[in-house]
Each structure stands twice: as C-alpha cells, then as structure tokens.
Amino acid sequence: EEYVDCLHFLLSIGNTLGYRNIIVNSDYTKKSTIKTFIYLNGKITALTVDLDVNNDKRHIYDNYEEMFNMFVGLGEKHLGFKWSDVVDAYFKKNEVNYERQKVGY
Image (cartoon, rainbow, N blue to C red):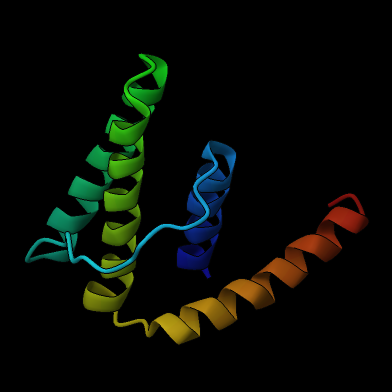
C-alpha cells in the first residue's frame, strides 16, 4: 500500500509536468535495495533541483523517466511486486482516496 502511495505521488508529479507517456523499459536499479533506494532519493533530489533552476525540458524529462524506471525496478526487482498487482492495488487505493475526498477526509 505504501509503494502504491509513492506511485501515486510520482504519477502526480509526472502529470503536473505534462509527462503522460513515460517509457518503462530500463533497469536503473542497483545491486541492493538500500543502494537502489538511495539512488532513487538522489534522482528525486536532482529533479527538484532541475525544476528550481529551470533546467532544459529534455533534461528534466530524462531525469523523471529514469527516476520512474528506477521506482518500478525497486518494486519489481527488490520488493518482489508484479507490475500487474501494483496496477490493481493502485486502482483500488485510488477508489478509496476518491471516496475520502468526497467526505472531506
């Protein structure tokens, strides 16, 4: 559930930036879960800096795509999630979040 919450935030960032066609086809993970998580955190930080200094749009897109691929790899390779299960959990959680919004949660 926490992984799906993080996915929601990453997708929201992508939507805000106008990235709706991210290609998930590269494994940017590291050998260990901890190193992958640390590198993922670094990518998030780098994206923040890119946006703060108005870096080249292509550079920002590439950074986001790499970050997203690394996040997917973290789930599949290190946490043992099947992507189809993640997608199902995402939509179930999305329904819960939508209901919470309707009642002012």
